[in-house]
Image (cartoon, helix red, strand yellow):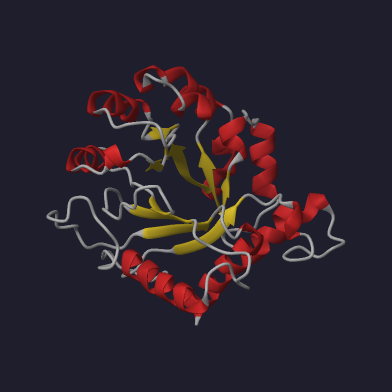
Length: 270
Protein backbone atom coordinates (compact mmCIF):
# COMPACT_ATOMS: atom_id res chain seq x y z
CA UNK A 1 0.00 0.00 0.00
CA UNK A 2 2.87 2.38 -0.68
CA UNK A 3 2.32 3.18 -4.35
CA UNK A 4 1.59 6.69 -5.53
CA UNK A 5 -2.10 5.83 -5.72
CA UNK A 6 -2.39 4.82 -2.08
CA UNK A 7 -1.35 6.10 1.32
CA UNK A 8 0.36 3.89 3.90
CA UNK A 9 -1.93 1.87 6.16
CA UNK A 10 -0.70 1.12 9.67
CA UNK A 11 -2.61 -1.00 12.19
CA UNK A 12 -1.71 -1.21 15.86
CA UNK A 13 -3.02 -1.18 19.40
CA UNK A 14 -2.97 1.01 22.47
CA UNK A 15 0.27 0.79 24.43
CA UNK A 16 2.65 -2.13 24.89
CA UNK A 17 2.46 -2.77 28.64
CA UNK A 18 -0.50 -5.00 29.52
CA UNK A 19 -0.04 -8.00 31.80
CA UNK A 20 -2.65 -10.24 30.08
CA UNK A 21 -0.56 -10.03 26.89
CA UNK A 22 2.10 -12.20 28.52
CA UNK A 23 1.49 -15.67 27.16
CA UNK A 24 -1.14 -14.46 24.67
CA UNK A 25 1.05 -12.06 22.68
CA UNK A 26 4.41 -11.82 24.44
CA UNK A 27 6.35 -15.00 25.16
CA UNK A 28 5.98 -15.94 28.83
CA UNK A 29 9.65 -15.40 29.68
CA UNK A 30 10.20 -12.24 27.63
CA UNK A 31 11.91 -9.56 29.72
CA UNK A 32 9.60 -6.61 30.41
CA UNK A 33 12.29 -4.31 29.04
CA UNK A 34 11.94 -6.08 25.68
CA UNK A 35 8.18 -5.59 25.32
CA UNK A 36 8.29 -2.46 23.19
CA UNK A 37 10.85 -3.83 20.76
CA UNK A 38 8.95 -7.13 20.51
CA UNK A 39 5.65 -5.34 19.86
CA UNK A 40 7.26 -3.08 17.26
CA UNK A 41 8.53 -6.15 15.41
CA UNK A 42 4.94 -7.35 15.00
CA UNK A 43 2.92 -4.16 14.38
CA UNK A 44 3.94 -0.94 12.60
CA UNK A 45 2.39 1.53 15.05
CA UNK A 46 1.28 1.96 18.66
CA UNK A 47 -0.92 4.60 20.26
CA UNK A 48 0.64 5.86 23.50
CA UNK A 49 -1.76 6.54 26.34
CA UNK A 50 0.87 7.42 28.93
CA UNK A 51 1.44 10.88 27.47
CA UNK A 52 -2.16 11.70 28.37
CA UNK A 53 -1.59 11.14 32.08
CA UNK A 54 1.96 12.31 32.72
CA UNK A 55 4.69 14.41 31.17
CA UNK A 56 7.46 12.38 29.56
CA UNK A 57 11.07 13.48 29.01
CA UNK A 58 13.24 13.87 25.90
CA UNK A 59 15.31 10.94 27.18
CA UNK A 60 12.23 8.72 27.29
CA UNK A 61 11.13 9.59 23.77
CA UNK A 62 14.67 8.99 22.48
CA UNK A 63 14.71 5.59 24.22
CA UNK A 64 11.42 4.60 22.57
CA UNK A 65 12.80 5.57 19.19
CA UNK A 66 15.95 3.52 19.76
CA UNK A 67 13.96 0.39 20.62
CA UNK A 68 11.83 0.37 17.47
CA UNK A 69 12.67 -0.42 13.83
CA UNK A 70 12.79 1.95 10.89
CA UNK A 71 9.32 2.79 9.65
CA UNK A 72 7.64 2.34 13.03
CA UNK A 73 5.36 5.19 14.12
CA UNK A 74 4.07 6.30 17.53
CA UNK A 75 0.78 8.14 17.92
CA UNK A 76 0.82 10.22 21.11
CA UNK A 77 -2.15 11.34 23.16
CA UNK A 78 -2.01 15.00 24.10
CA UNK A 79 -2.09 15.67 27.85
CA UNK A 80 -5.32 15.69 29.82
CA UNK A 81 -4.36 19.07 31.24
CA UNK A 82 -4.93 20.54 27.80
CA UNK A 83 -8.25 18.89 26.93
CA UNK A 84 -9.99 18.36 30.28
CA UNK A 85 -10.81 21.98 30.99
CA UNK A 86 -13.89 24.16 30.85
CA UNK A 87 -12.27 26.82 28.67
CA UNK A 88 -10.20 25.22 25.91
CA UNK A 89 -8.89 28.60 24.80
CA UNK A 90 -6.79 28.62 27.99
CA UNK A 91 -4.89 25.43 27.09
CA UNK A 92 -1.91 27.16 25.50
CA UNK A 93 0.57 26.57 28.33
CA UNK A 94 -0.33 22.87 28.61
CA UNK A 95 0.05 22.37 24.87
CA UNK A 96 3.40 24.14 24.90
CA UNK A 97 4.70 22.01 27.81
CA UNK A 98 3.73 18.88 25.92
CA UNK A 99 5.49 19.98 22.75
CA UNK A 100 8.58 20.91 24.78
CA UNK A 101 8.63 17.58 26.66
CA UNK A 102 10.52 15.94 23.81
CA UNK A 103 8.24 14.21 21.28
CA UNK A 104 10.45 15.49 18.45
CA UNK A 105 13.13 13.13 19.81
CA UNK A 106 11.14 10.40 18.05
CA UNK A 107 12.29 11.81 14.70
CA UNK A 108 10.48 10.27 11.76
CA UNK A 109 8.78 7.87 14.20
CA UNK A 110 6.60 10.71 15.48
CA UNK A 111 3.11 10.11 14.21
CA UNK A 112 -0.22 11.84 14.92
CA UNK A 113 -0.86 13.80 18.11
CA UNK A 114 -4.27 12.71 19.37
CA UNK A 115 -6.35 15.29 21.23
CA UNK A 116 -9.06 13.31 23.01
CA UNK A 117 -11.96 15.16 24.62
CA UNK A 118 -14.19 13.92 27.41
CA UNK A 119 -17.61 12.47 26.56
CA UNK A 120 -19.15 15.35 28.50
CA UNK A 121 -17.38 18.05 26.46
CA UNK A 122 -19.91 19.78 24.21
CA UNK A 123 -19.18 21.62 20.98
CA UNK A 124 -18.67 25.35 21.33
CA UNK A 125 -17.54 26.73 17.98
CA UNK A 126 -15.71 29.77 19.33
CA UNK A 127 -13.92 28.00 22.16
CA UNK A 128 -13.07 24.91 20.14
CA UNK A 129 -11.83 27.07 17.30
CA UNK A 130 -9.61 28.94 19.75
CA UNK A 131 -8.16 25.60 20.90
CA UNK A 132 -7.38 24.54 17.34
CA UNK A 133 -5.59 27.84 16.80
CA UNK A 134 -3.28 26.89 19.69
CA UNK A 135 -2.09 23.67 18.04
CA UNK A 136 1.16 24.44 16.21
CA UNK A 137 1.27 23.19 12.60
CA UNK A 138 5.02 22.65 12.94
CA UNK A 139 7.89 22.95 15.41
CA UNK A 140 11.51 23.56 14.42
CA UNK A 141 10.65 22.80 10.82
CA UNK A 142 8.93 19.51 11.69
CA UNK A 143 5.32 19.23 10.55
CA UNK A 144 2.97 18.09 13.30
CA UNK A 145 -0.06 15.95 12.53
CA UNK A 146 -2.94 16.70 14.87
CA UNK A 147 -6.09 14.57 15.09
CA UNK A 148 -9.25 15.25 17.11
CA UNK A 149 -11.33 12.73 19.03
CA UNK A 150 -14.67 14.19 20.10
CA UNK A 151 -17.09 12.06 22.07
CA UNK A 152 -20.25 14.14 22.53
CA UNK A 153 -23.11 14.07 20.04
CA UNK A 154 -23.17 17.88 19.86
CA UNK A 155 -20.14 17.61 17.54
CA UNK A 156 -22.30 15.90 14.92
CA UNK A 157 -22.92 19.17 13.13
CA UNK A 158 -21.61 20.52 9.81
CA UNK A 159 -20.24 23.53 11.72
CA UNK A 160 -17.75 21.32 13.55
CA UNK A 161 -16.81 19.46 10.39
CA UNK A 162 -16.22 22.77 8.60
CA UNK A 163 -14.03 23.97 11.49
CA UNK A 164 -11.92 20.80 11.47
CA UNK A 165 -11.63 21.02 7.68
CA UNK A 166 -10.59 24.68 7.91
CA UNK A 167 -7.67 23.60 10.12
CA UNK A 168 -7.02 20.48 8.01
CA UNK A 169 -7.24 18.30 11.11
CA UNK A 170 -8.73 14.81 10.87
CA UNK A 171 -11.54 13.73 13.15
CA UNK A 172 -11.17 10.27 14.67
CA UNK A 173 -13.57 7.68 13.35
CA UNK A 174 -14.65 5.87 16.52
CA UNK A 175 -16.33 2.51 16.36
CA UNK A 176 -17.82 2.55 19.84
CA UNK A 177 -21.05 1.62 21.59
CA UNK A 178 -21.93 5.20 22.57
CA UNK A 179 -19.48 7.72 21.04
CA UNK A 180 -20.47 9.40 17.76
CA UNK A 181 -19.15 7.80 14.57
CA UNK A 182 -17.88 10.51 12.22
CA UNK A 183 -16.36 9.39 8.91
CA UNK A 184 -16.05 12.83 7.31
CA UNK A 185 -12.62 13.48 5.80
CA UNK A 186 -11.24 16.74 7.19
CA UNK A 187 -7.46 16.31 6.83
CA UNK A 188 -4.77 14.61 4.79
CA UNK A 189 -4.75 11.36 6.80
CA UNK A 190 -7.33 9.10 8.45
CA UNK A 191 -7.35 7.90 12.06
CA UNK A 192 -9.70 5.18 13.31
CA UNK A 193 -10.13 3.70 16.77
CA UNK A 194 -11.99 0.37 16.78
CA UNK A 195 -13.54 -0.39 20.15
CA UNK A 196 -16.06 -3.18 19.64
CA UNK A 197 -13.73 -6.15 19.87
CA UNK A 198 -14.10 -9.24 22.02
CA UNK A 199 -11.62 -11.32 23.98
CA UNK A 200 -13.58 -14.37 22.82
CA UNK A 201 -12.38 -13.80 19.24
CA UNK A 202 -8.91 -15.08 18.35
CA UNK A 203 -8.13 -11.78 16.62
CA UNK A 204 -10.39 -9.46 18.63
CA UNK A 205 -12.87 -9.18 15.72
CA UNK A 206 -14.50 -11.96 13.70
CA UNK A 207 -12.75 -12.74 10.39
CA UNK A 208 -15.55 -11.26 8.28
CA UNK A 209 -15.44 -8.03 10.30
CA UNK A 210 -11.68 -7.81 9.79
CA UNK A 211 -12.19 -8.41 6.07
CA UNK A 212 -14.67 -5.55 5.92
CA UNK A 213 -12.39 -3.22 7.86
CA UNK A 214 -9.51 -4.07 5.56
CA UNK A 215 -11.60 -2.96 2.57
CA UNK A 216 -12.54 0.28 4.33
CA UNK A 217 -8.90 1.00 5.09
CA UNK A 218 -8.01 0.44 1.45
CA UNK A 219 -10.77 2.82 0.38
CA UNK A 220 -9.48 5.51 2.73
CA UNK A 221 -5.88 5.06 1.61
CA UNK A 222 -6.93 5.43 -2.03
CA UNK A 223 -8.61 8.75 -1.23
CA UNK A 224 -12.20 7.56 -1.02
CA UNK A 225 -14.77 7.37 1.74
CA UNK A 226 -16.35 4.01 2.69
CA UNK A 227 -19.98 4.12 1.67
CA UNK A 228 -21.18 2.23 4.75
CA UNK A 229 -19.82 4.65 7.37
CA UNK A 230 -21.79 7.69 8.59
CA UNK A 231 -20.82 11.23 7.67
CA UNK A 232 -22.12 14.43 9.22
CA UNK A 233 -21.78 16.57 6.10
CA UNK A 234 -22.61 14.15 3.30
CA UNK A 235 -22.96 16.98 0.76
CA UNK A 236 -19.26 17.81 0.79
CA UNK A 237 -17.25 16.30 -2.05
CA UNK A 238 -14.03 14.98 -0.60
CA UNK A 239 -11.00 15.52 -2.85
CA UNK A 240 -9.74 12.11 -3.93
CA UNK A 241 -6.07 11.84 -3.10
CA UNK A 242 -3.95 9.21 -1.33
CA UNK A 243 -4.11 9.37 2.46
CA UNK A 244 -2.13 7.58 5.13
CA UNK A 245 -4.36 5.59 7.47
CA UNK A 246 -3.82 4.80 11.15
CA UNK A 247 -6.11 2.25 12.80
CA UNK A 248 -5.93 1.14 16.43
CA UNK A 249 -7.71 -1.64 18.27
CA UNK A 250 -8.55 -0.18 21.65
CA UNK A 251 -10.34 -1.03 24.89
CA UNK A 252 -12.83 -3.86 24.22
CA UNK A 253 -11.15 -7.11 23.31
CA UNK A 254 -7.83 -5.69 24.44
CA UNK A 255 -6.30 -9.08 25.18
CA UNK A 256 -6.50 -9.90 21.46
CA UNK A 257 -5.86 -6.38 20.13
CA UNK A 258 -2.32 -7.17 18.92
CA UNK A 259 -3.66 -10.14 16.97
CA UNK A 260 -6.26 -7.89 15.34
CA UNK A 261 -3.60 -5.44 14.19
CA UNK A 262 -1.44 -8.26 12.86
CA UNK A 263 -4.43 -9.82 11.09
CA UNK A 264 -5.15 -6.52 9.33
CA UNK A 265 -1.53 -6.16 8.21
CA UNK A 266 -1.50 -9.75 6.95
CA UNK A 267 -4.65 -9.08 4.91
CA UNK A 268 -3.10 -5.99 3.40
CA UNK A 269 0.03 -7.85 2.44
CA UNK A 270 -1.96 -10.71 0.94
